Image (cartoon, rainbow, N blue to C red; front, side, top):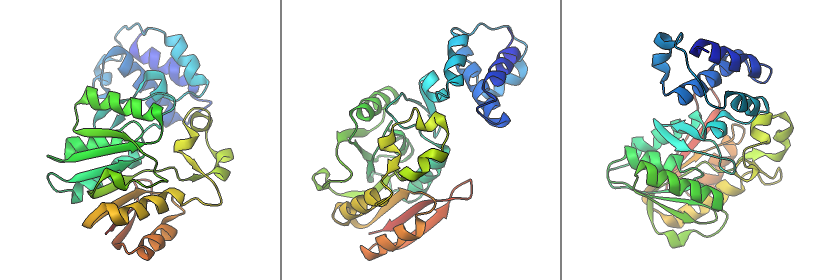
Length: 276
């Protein structure tokens, strides 16, 4: 079977679950990962004969709505290949924008805290992109901590991974120049409208919050930041698109200043950052 035929076979199988563009992207990703090509090489290798081990198993998992990142065991983020598996949130392209904003204000040697690190995507990216930075990555999930540690060791980043509860007192971790977090923020009431590849496989504790207190993580992290951020330090959040105004109001009530609310590449309010 050629590369082209392999891609078409995967596309055909998963088109009922995904739109054409996403199905094609998933199929190409599987083929590239399995055959050792990058996307730029596909166009000149489409007619190469290839043998993809366990192709039928891969297709059956994709048809069952298992995310391609879990099927392959890797996710791309800020130019890095991160290990991911069930129990750990899959990093999204929108979060790369948050990293870019942090890099824009981070000085050489900055101390950065990543709250709710998951796979370590934000923490490792910042450690690689900001010279001399010291990053502490925290999570409450043992599964997430294990994956983050694996990624830190494999990629080689100056990141310390620590178990801590974002809803509790984190002051024992010390003082920081920057605190960044992509916490759980999707209301439970949104579950019914979400795709099966997210709801059935990704960890609900990393995604969802109770409808009656959707800002619980933002509030706790911001309150910790009052004592844990150095004077003039920055607090960065990825947010749910409908909570922007409430989060800005909360930060200002806690004494934060220079607050910014910004949209992501899809035109949704996705980032808030503020200064202590």
